[in-house]
Length: 259
Image 1 (cartoon, rainbow, N blue to C red):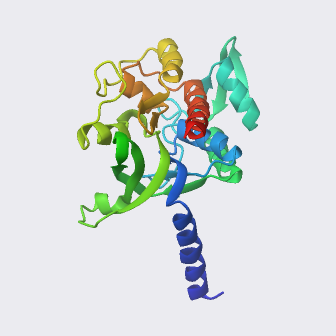
Image 2 (cartoon, rainbow, N blue to C red):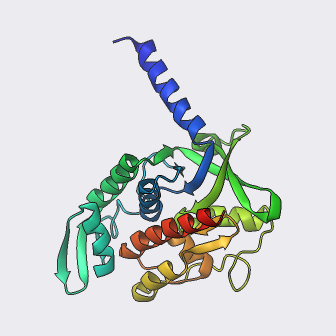
């Protein structure tokens, strides 16, 4: 085996994927459960999408389950999605199903990629592109190690018809819109309200309700939606994340059809 050929194969194939991702229908930021679920349903419908994940690994908070016990819980509605994905979930008691966190994270990733989603890890979103009509129309990217090393390296940009903020508790893209652009979100205050303390029952319901287009061209999903609209956090029950991701995909398809 020739080391240079190996190197060329990696560089050429990666650059090909990255060039393809510079013009997207939907750009998803964050490869947690909501982001990967959205990616799966979008890619399944032949929507041109890519996920940008700042960390080395995908899966967000799923891997650790609850307090590093790598099990998660879903409600019956969440179990329907796990069943669709072929992920094993066993009934603990009526209305509560337990799944292996490692199986959930790895299966979501595999299904999203096999459906046609491109996932770029170790890439951070450092800004948004906003043009006419105060609409998010792209992302500004840099390598995550550049930020970690505090290097002054200029970023690159991609264009996307829609962006999904799936960055979790930090709701990073919504913060960029409000802080760098001065944009007003579709919340009661026009700003990020911030998540409230744990209340699983309410949080699971509201994370789906709050999966919305929060700014023209920008959809919030998962814990980003929770933080933006001020809902309670819900801990290691993940059905709402899956349902929120599915709703985000459906909403994105509807918005793309409207043009």
